[in-house]
Image 1 (tube, rainbow, N blue to C red):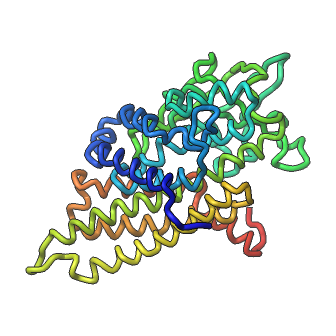
Image 2 (cartoon, helix red, strand yellow):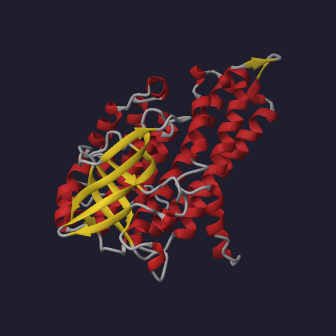
Image 3 (spheres, rainbow, N blue to C red):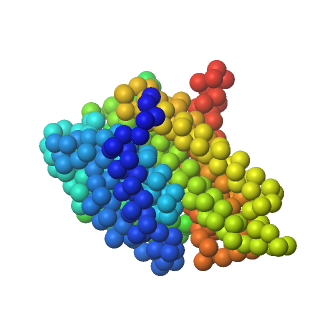
Length: 388
């Protein structure tokens, strides 16, 4: 790994800072309160080239990697966008772009990647189910072949952007779990047009990130042509893995990004707020908890860089992505918690935004993989027996 800041990375950072300056905390406070999709921000990400960072140049992208995407995400989050800095990039520009880039046919790449790069196409990712959750191998959504088509039936939950997405990458079973030798066999992915008859979307009322909807998606006799199969039939697990590691890297960037945003905001407040004739930041009871959390975030960010570097080299990186995600989330949560404490009662007021960042960062404990499952993966790599 080379820690020298290249011209490209400096440009990514400065561009992200400029975008975040335009779409800062007040903007996101309003979008959250109104439960309104931030179309202006989405379009600006396209203008800045961020939607196309992982898209090859021949399809209008920048042919960059997860190190670059992680930098863009963390900077957007830290400079004022909060979770939106990752939230608006991780599904389409991250997971969908990678999934189609690595596993799509030439026709699929030409159809979808060009539109992804410009921000003209929005994807959702249909993985989670009410009865499967973290155990993706237990998905019950079925795809049954019928001539030149597949018929899809099932239910998904917590599918972000599904109320407005153009397409969904849908995880299904083409062979039932009880009929395969390995749990990873029998899974297939499809690129589904969300306007296809038989798809019903119902938003879920939730705690935060209401500037986008997360929904239940019901599929009843949804017919898709065989050309919409992404990768090989029954071999979709490995295509899905290609998409999961970038998601974890993205959430690691969110953890440190939101944490740094809250910490920097609290540091500014602690320098201005005076109690007992001194800035509250001069008291170590205020400064040390934030400082310690910041040091942990800096360390976690380095692990994210390593995980992203390995991913970009085509190397195995499951251990590193889980370590990066788990440590970044814990450090970021502590940073936001201590930042809220520094504000005292005002930390509970919406006008200071830290309460919103507290709601946002707590999602990262639960998704895209829970902290418990991340530590299960890590522990297994360390030599502990498998616990799931």
